[in-house]
Amino acid sequence: MGSSEPVYRSFEFLIDFFRSTPASALIPMFILFFGIGEFNKVAIAAFSALLIIVFNSAYGVIHATKNRILAAKVMGANRFKIFKDVLFWESLPQTFIGLRSAISLALVIVIVAEMFIGTETGLGKRIIDAQQVLNVKDMYASILITGILGYALNALFLLIEKRFIHWSGR
Image 1 (cartoon, rainbow, N blue to C red):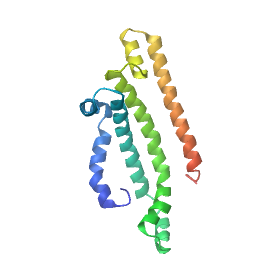
Image 2: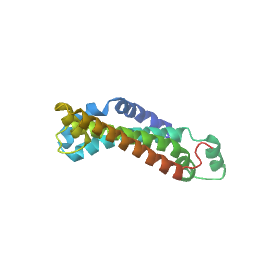
Image 3: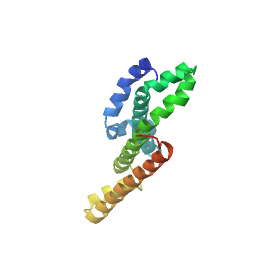
Image 4: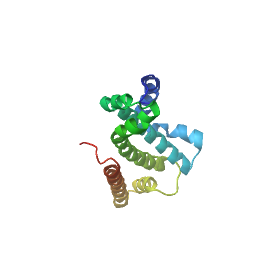
């Protein structure tokens, strides 16, 4: 999408619209489409995360180093070869930024969905149940666990990012 400006411009409004819409506000729509269940939570979290990943990946491709693209063209590379050998690698740092942001958002959306969609288990259910009976210790313990989980996921993605795109920032 980022390698073709007309394609990017045609999808830009749609992506920006849904990216700016709070994903938690879309929960009723997802209940209509997917019903009440575990798949619903996964679908809304994946939808909100996918928009961030797509936007950041396209941004990374758009802002790829023009000199490397021109060098590949001069060496006779076709469009697929330029995408595979230049644009893909140039966009990886921005894609990983999108992945880290998306995993945080997906965690928040799953917790919120567990709070409001009928579920039997989950941290969101535990937080809302503790809040309703004024069990402050359990509520804050669950919130703390959520924060630790988010921190651990972010740290994991940072390790993966350092492993796969070690050249970034150099």
